[in-house]
Length: 114
Length: 115
Image (cartoon, rainbow over all chains, first blue to last red; front, side, top):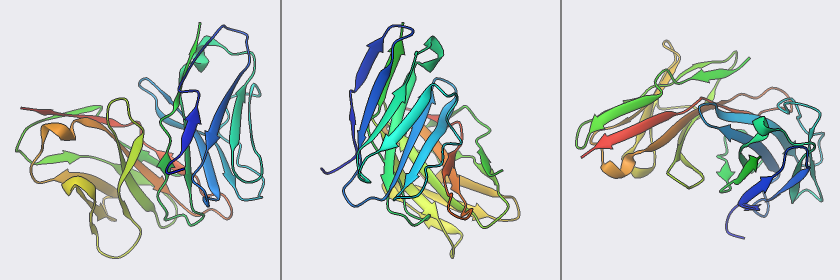
């Protein structure tokens, strides 16, 4: 596709349920990032994938959060036993490997936990 | 740890006036600095970046930013603001740390251009 695609665009769930958020990066981009955007909190780094290397999980807020990237392309962010404080916009971005390369962001998934 | 600070939550500017959105950084190595913009109900878009070379960087939509090493700043500027520039602006820094080189963002600054 032409850009980073995220699905669903909106997700409403009940507290305690599990959710899966999907990201389809730009073809050829080896780096993939997940960020969380909450009101007044800016952009919070969650996890970073680079090629076949072990992901940088240093930003995951708890062990309820996990992510995987299959075949170096599509990524899924899973939140288990969702809590109300998990409500936020989850953004995915991709880029080429070099650190001076810009990130391309998807439109995000708005997660609401009731 | 690398970080960026955007000291202003909101900046108000009259249309046609010059604008500045402030950003300071704290890194141990040579920084790669970026500005991104988020328009209402849209994803983040890249505006400009500083890697090396000329301290004044020009980007999209008439924006520019000046890298100042002594003041550890990377302020975003535009000579004449447009109402359509109203958006949320993020400064970000990236530093090579072996294999890990994540991008760290500031909290964002709301820019409001008044007609």
